[in-house]
Amino acid sequence: KNEVEQSPQNLTAQEGEFITINCSYSVGISALHWLQQHPGGGIVSLFMLSSGKKKHGRLIATINIQEKHSSLHITASHPRDSAVYICAVAKGGSEKLVFGKGTKLTVNP
Amino acid sequence: EPEVTQTPSHQVTQMGQEVILRCVPISNHLYFYWYRQILGQKVEFLVSFYNNEISEKSEIFDDQFSVERPDGSNFTLKIRSTKLEDSAMYFCASRGQIEAFFGQGTRLTVV
Image (cartoon, rainbow over all chains, first blue to last red):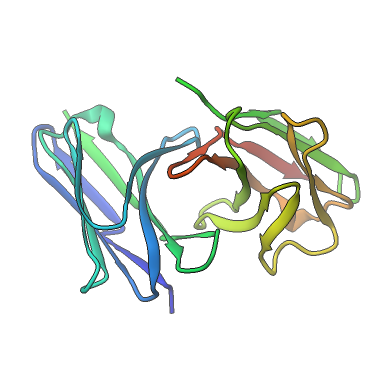
């Protein structure tokens, strides 16, 4: 069983829609990361969370440690938001990140 | 904005050849990582490096792999004798106190 599960796998939205991507994990963690992978392959770090909520521009990330669940929200989505969004967790006591399979988001104009 | 730089962006090599993938981490970072992503699959951890030694490695990181920080700025991943299944995107990352930054990746193709 995967330690990090994301849903949905694929998501298509119209420009302007509110987007939610979910991440559930089954292990104890010290932090959770949301990453964006562009079509060319490069990875950009969006958020690192250990509790609560963070906001950066149109992006909001939340985490519920008790429920082992995190969400990434995009408000007023735009075609340039089209990318793969990846959830990754730092397991407690470990340096490594364990990655989810990613959610491919396509925002149509 | 500081960034992690990887070279080359794409490398094609023959099976059995040695390859060295290079990374320049962010200058004041202390923790360094290599990850790989086989086409169509999720990103996998290979190795972490701190204080000039490996701090953690995965099962993938066998004797064919090695890492080095030769001159205080570069961080390299060497694959001694490449196999077809080593074809993947290899990402370097570095971390200061909190957040990790990733490079753009090196796409390695073994033929």
